[in-house]
Image (tube, rainbow, N blue to C red; front, side, top):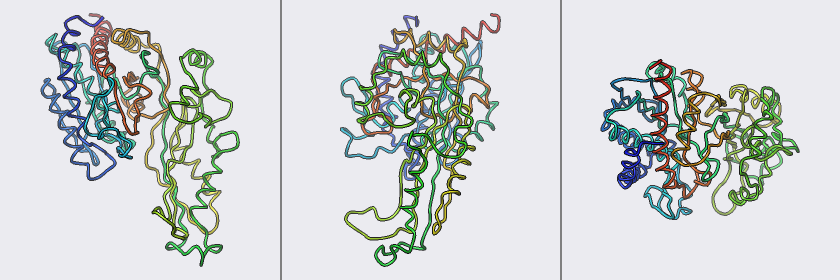
Amino acid sequence: MPAKELIKYLQAHRDEQLEQLFELLRFPSISSQSPREGDCLACVERIAEHLRGLGFSAELRPWRRHPILLARRACDRPAGRLLIYGHYDVQPPDPLEQWQTPPFEPAIRDGRIYARGASDDKGQLFAHVKAVEAILATRGELPLEVIFFVEGEEEIGSPELERFVTGAAAELAAEFAVVSDSDFFAAGLPTLTYGLRGLAYVELTLAGPREDLHSGVHGGAAVNPLNAVARMLSGMHDERGRVTLPGFYDDVVELTAAERRAWAELPFDKAAYAAAIGADPAGGERGLPVLERRWARPTLDCNGIVGGYQGEGAKTVIPASATAKISMRLVPNQRPEKAVESLERYVAENTPAGVRASVKVSAQARPVLTALDSPAVAAAKRALKDAFGAEVALVRNGASVPITELIQRVLKVDPILMGFGLPDDNLHAPNEHFRLEQFYGGIAASAALIVNLAGLARDAQGD
């Protein structure tokens, strides 16, 4: 169990912890919007100030549009290193009219913190900062060296992050790594994630006439790029919900029987899930369980179509071009570059006469699987059980967190995917929130994890 003095400290400082988190949540650090670059910078500078106040050397590294924060604190008798990853950027809050309270003015309702970034990822990241503070306040020193790696472009796919990680590999080297950008499977069920899907995000553009044309004068002669892109998208799935891109499934690793049994025992209620999303979960490949479709099968989705007239009322035009934004979620052992090649082949084979096609790659991330039987995972399970008082579930997640695969492949460490959110936190949607019990429990779990990992490192050193 966490030391009594540490728990006492955490409980005595809850108001302070909450107000400091609110301060970070007030920054509209939207990485995808250029006018918010100053807010992104102000937010990460405030995180750096927190860490410097705890004795960390904290440096902002210029990177593309938004800097990366690297902060480090050594200890007198080091028992290894722990790398903690998080991100300070957030999604746009639109549609604003659906928020009950302004997205960047944090509010508490029914035991939940409502604000953009509350769960994804400022609240989860700040739980680690407060855990370090609690250990220092009660013990005077950290039991191992801690490195914070905080980026500001995760919500736009962490473009070129591999180049940064490769260049800073020596500075980021650690025996352990933890990423908290995920959630529990259900309330009251602490969860470790051992697999994530990868991502290939592209923009498919079909260009037709030189400029928008009158659909009455030129309709029937000029090819409509919107019609063409719609036909192309509709052909990317067959009647069974499978993706039709050539070779798309060639490298897919099938789910094991043991995983299927374990997932079948999870407290998943299909009707409750349907109610939560407001739709029947009938998408994806027919005949497969919902969790398998969400976690272990690849997908292709159109995320948006741009082209033609979007204003009120009618405007009869054949648009000059149309663009479809497409995300492909990938599973082990698929590779994003091969998925893009597969889509490009499909596009080349299905582009009609009268339009020209181009494919732009916006983001790529490889899928991740981590070992389930490592001492680090056991240490994380103990930490979560101590903090939340329940046995720990092991799951996959259908989302992508690009840093996890880079930590695994470039830094040669299996990251511990220990998130504190809940499935109904409304990530990327209006009224995003983070339960107070998850925030405070996350701090306690992080502190316990640091202590447990230090013990592992000392055992490995023979101390």
